[in-house]
Length: 332
Image (cartoon, rainbow, N blue to C red; front, side):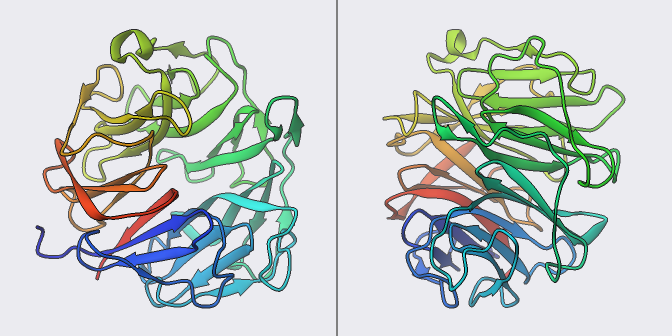
């Protein structure tokens, strides 16, 4: 096991936040200051002060200044009040890397909120997001991503609602075209910088790649390669942004899953070795901020895995949860 296991936080459905200091082997509940049985779907570590963490829940937005040990609820327009689940649930979070006092929050029913002062005051972003649909009933903003090549450019994915981009730090958003996109059901996005910038979008039925800033997409037909087309969480290696990791499964929540990795910005993929077959779709990832070899992932139905070799092989951790939706790792 790595010398510095960091602090691993797991956001669950119905059990709040759990915290591990031994590489995911054991966890203790760490939900002090929030509704104990909150649904936690988003965790975001401050890019400058890693002991500061934000948690998005169905009981409002919370902030921790002690590495996830305790939490304080931040009043906001989407806050249900008194820590009790209300009509709006947080699904995604982003602190702008160059301006970390600017917080973006994606919610269900679909909308985006923005604060420029660390959550003291808020405004609702100008985004043409439909709140409802005939399949899910409510749409949601599943992911928010900063563009590593443009500090003012931010990307959002909606389920169901396609890909959206803001060029002014999240104030105003434009829906992009869906030419070639396999589905408007966006689960996650990743932006790979370089001369040939690449966008990768995970959806409910395929993986999609764009090389023209999201104007057109090429679906990858991964179901034919892997026998499963449901794609969920995406992350990149901090030292090599061309190295990507993708969580897949046979459906949601599914009965099996896999970790795929790419060394060439998503053009080709390999399947990682897991010590135990997942019980459901691999949903989310977290990377140690100072050790690129140490990674964590989780299946949606509660299996947690650790990799100490940059994602080639993964060992199942002992602790199991009922349902995990998000992970975050910060230095110990």
